[in-house]
Image (cartoon, rainbow, N blue to C red):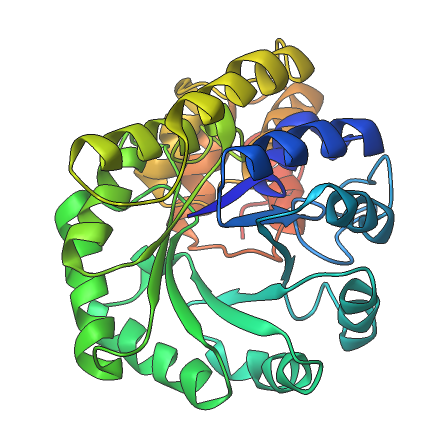
Length: 334
């Protein structure tokens, strides 16, 4: 299992995690024997910017702090080509990461080739993320996964960035990747909770053959958050899976650390989050859409639904302002 509290969960706290908070959460995850701990800005290496929100502390500093707290778990970072660079990947490798997760839109696997090859040259384990996996057919997704596998990806992920998939749709996508890649390639699932299906989708992926599941403590993450790591671990334990994770220790760090650090900022399945899943919109757009709704006096639901109609993807955050201005009548509709 990979815990993304300190990466995807960064969206919930507007990327303001401190070194001490990272140390405390990482220590707890390591004690609970979570296999992989991911740490970076919510949008990955290089994400600290005007477009995506500035971090409280640099990725490299947070990675170094996390590295010092890990005795059992691997340390991972996310990189989205076009946001993060190969140079920043090298800096993360110097800071002690074991795994890099390279993420692209589900139809753009080819733009990850350079970064995957650079990661292999650095001796890193690689996982490839096919974001917004609901926007392509299972067979199309499998063909994109093949591109990443051939470029050096060790693990391939179905990524429900919008929380728009239902369990049977997850099953079909995992099965398609398995058919394309064979039985010896590890598959993963990254589930968001915008339709309330985060844990169910992760379990469906496991049933279909995924061996690595992402979660975050208390479901911390963009939109309505992710599948909750502690809930996933408990459910897998009840199902008889041997995860190696100490469920009680994991629950302790969720309740005693994350709930305290993020008091008042834990994700909820509210109207805006639900609309993300309903419209199939990237989960990290929520806070940007909410801010635009306040600034321009239009309902956030209307903004999100229009973004979904236009099939926007990660990297098109500028469209949020365009849509809000159009809905407010400030500019003619496009």
